[in-house]
Image (cartoon, rainbow, N blue to C red; front, side, top):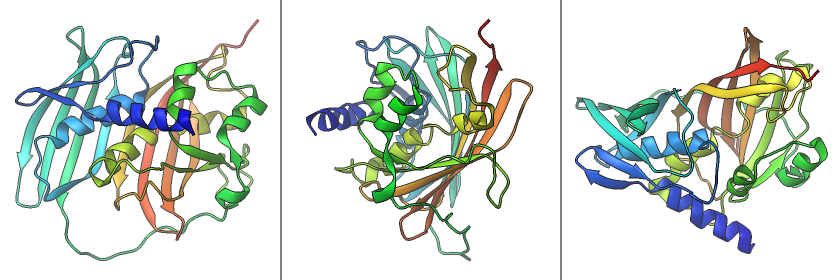
Length: 286
């Protein structure tokens, strides 16, 4: 529990950006961790920067991001916000994440003044409940996945349980798919709820496209990287309750893989939808 409490504190530190000047922000960094910055961290910090210029009467309903360069964990990232539009109902922001003066990510986000409307939603898939799912740490050990220590530390902030994947798409939708349950206790509060979900939305999504091919994302046989990422927020995520992250991959090819995700609360309410494409360059070992 001490490790989880420490990880949650580190997560909150990473998700709160520092305002340097009007529309310029700096994200916290982790100098003790070498290597590339986790993509979900850059997306979440960029969204937090965009929120700094939008009033509380509007909430983010969608974001679209392109990863351009690998970020360096040992240095801070500077975020520049461009205020493209402020209307009566909607506002739009662009954010450029910078290291060494070069963009590492471009993000566009849209904010909507909440209002009632016609409602329908996709049905939650029938999967084992979290009490019958396997803790993520055990699954990683059983699969022999080589998860970098920095990533393992970030994952420990969440209680994550993993269900059995359908690697060949034998289910009714005919697509390879996987799912996990996750929650964050204690919650970081409503102000960080959508930012935190943006952070977590990068967990395992693109790896769904590798399921039919029997290769691990962190394997030496795969040169992998996220290329773009989109999130649509439908409801405020209750992160201190169990949420189901259902992922499926309708296509891979040309050294890329495409995946879609849906997040539901335990009652079956659709909380958010995601899509991601990633580089999956196959370099089998000789």
